[in-house]
Every structure is written in structure tokens, then in C-alpha cells.
Image (cartoon, rainbow, N blue to C red; front, side, top):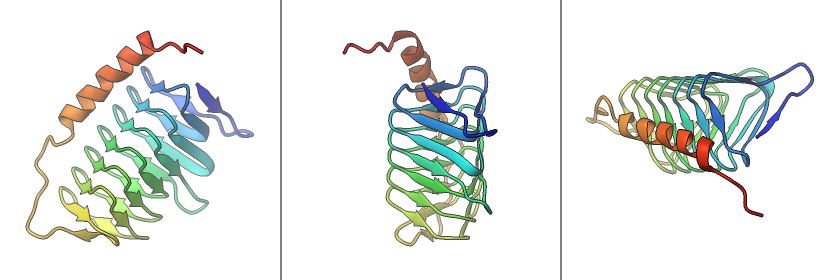
Length: 173
């Protein structure tokens, strides 16, 4: 695993957290129990903190960073899709940040919400709980409430995948 301290800033991994060997975790990053971080994801906490809640999965190619002003905090049971970018934002529990989406500084995404694929949540934007943000820049989809449990299947799948990879992944070159 590519897990690095940066000066006094040292990552903390919760019980059963798994980081793929080709992912990078740097600095003041806290991964909760059962978190999985997949290939080429980068979590870099050089200025502030990154806190990832239990059983959240950070999928391939995702970039998570923080700033002097804004830590990045993700709740429990979140799904962060491939190639997403989260910078200095606060994400609630049971949230889907879909593939290739961007969530920028000072923004919040409420519990159970969805940021759609390719959406850009601008600075200091609030996505209410169980609502869906779509587009560039993101707007709230009117008249739609995200159903409860929408991340459950993915959370279970990625928890099982992490256990399988932990026990069976081997490099052949």
C-alpha cells in the first residue's frame, strides 16, 4: 500500500479498512472501519484533514483533497464512483457521488443524496438530504426524492470485493 506520513501528519486506518496497492493515501487521512480505496485513487491531506466514514468505498481514479479552510469529510456507507473529485466538502451518510462528478470547496451533500454522473457541485452549494444534483453547474432535480437504501447494494458489493481482494490479489510481474 502507498500510505505516507507527511511530517507529523499520519494516516489512520480503521479496522478492516483496505487500500489497493496502486492507491495513494497521504497525510492526515482517517479511514473508518471497512473503508475501501481502489486503484489509482488519491487521498491527499496535506493542509487540512480527510475523514472517511465506515464502509464507504472510494472507487478507481478518484481524487480527494482538502484545503487550509475546508476539511473533506465523508459519512458512513457512501459510494464515490470512478474518477470523482471531492475538494473541501462535507458529505453526509448513505450518499452516492457518481462517476466523474466534482464536489467543490465549502459544499455540503446531505444524508441519502445523489450527485449524478458528471455533475459539478460548485463552491458553497448545498445539496439537501435525499435530493439529486445533476448537471454543470449542478442543480437540484425538482420533485424527486432519492429512495432510502439506494447505496445498500453497492456498499455490500464493495465490502465483499475488498475482503476478496485483500485475500486473493497478487502481482504477477
